[in-house]
Image (cartoon, rainbow over all chains, first blue to last red; front, side, top):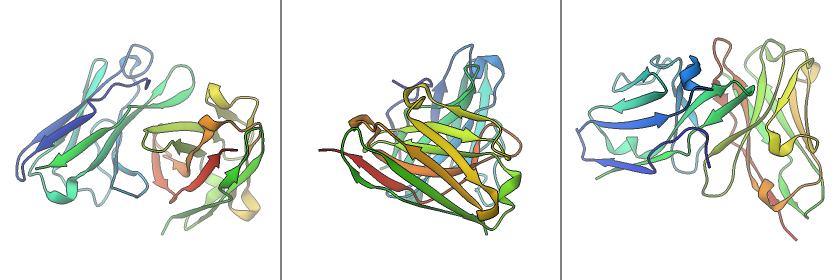
Length: 110
Length: 119
């Protein structure tokens, strides 16, 4: 059971907007720690997609955006493309001195 | 270009040991915290351990404390994970990852090495 809670799956048609939620607690997201997002394409290593709640590393399209409020965070993907089909993980820091992940969300592009 | 290349994975019996290595290049290795993150087959990501730039601080997830040891050799630009008393539940792909210098994230990942614990 993961410390951060994500929906197991989401789906959307090409061009649509989808969001993925990430719910934590007062010991991690609610304690003020930032949320980060990773994209894992099939058979590959994870890649940093969003850091510090809403910042994109160089090279990440602006179709990807992140937000945080209270004990939760969200990843939004607009203009959905077939190449976005992947697993997405949120991650934060916990007051128990460890980094924690969500269970992952599988995005299907219909 | 930042590169992290893991090695040392394989099949090991329960109770056995294995040492993973991660060769880093393309950045000043000694300036970064480094981590190991694992992913069991078909499962999500789990942070395992991390180590400070000079090796003076190390942190572990509870499930591996006392069994796994993270270390580094800055002269060789290498990160290690010594895994002892291995259990079936340690079966996973183990990724070497660079800690973000500005936050508690991971900005670069290796391709991973598979560890299978089975008799």
